Length: 424
Image (tube, rainbow, N blue to C red; front, side, top):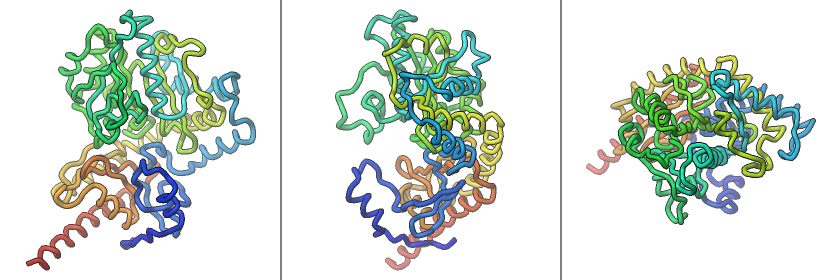
């Protein structure tokens, strides 16, 4: 596929620029159709999607099983509110609890469905605080939660209160108190931050927005041990890492660790509808009583039907295996670019943070060049880009994407060399 110069004056692009709030800075591509790992724009140009909706599209665009589940439910009932039960709700909760290993948890597991990832994080925060007061005995309004620096858990006012990202945080105060931030991967700092007021440790098993940062081996086991010893809840935000992305059902599985609460989202809705959930110990989620937390759309019939289809896909193990095996291939190929426009590569499974040499180009420019070569990716901070293709991607498509990255780096270096020669 040759380099394509984009027409940035399409009506849809102009409308978005004119009428939408500028809380995003999207690449100048307008997608009209999608299937599997590929999307097509309004001018019929095709692109390999290597972002996958920040892992919301783990199973690709319009996966037949997920679309079929949604269509079947659309013909029956889509919303009841939680004022009533519907026939998809109980089975969804049971099947998701079983996927999370409820049989191995003393006292059982409960599921609290919501819609977005941020809502699920807010739910976990509320539950952890209430558990701290009602069960652990923390003095009223004194509960603290330990988090990691450079985290990303969403953008609500409470969540950005413990963010260290100035873009997410600045000018949105006053901020919610009750959080202590420590360096990610540092067990000593974590231990020092825990005291009698601590009700939970909230972490991403791999930090996504920070650049796909994988913690040191044994870190998650250490977190689990510290939490157990101090009677503190371990809350794992697996919104991006979970449901197959890293080569196992959950990223915590790589260290054989089970948190007290899983926070799930994105891929749980299969890229069809927003679905999130908090899943964990019955004695923790059981502190909630009617009227204390809820959502009109949380656990709606359409969401539960799609969520059940997602769980069924994961129960086969096929997608976890694909992420593991193809992830090895992806990381081996990316490693060959280190020293050739790339300074470092991190990640696990079909998820990689690629540090572009900042002397060569920014992450934004790298993504723009990839777009013109037919690959969609997204930068995070500075010169880092993230690659997270759908788990349905083929080995050949992965190789093609890495080749396009190499081409983009080489092309830019060539242009830079020509500029130096012309100036001489």
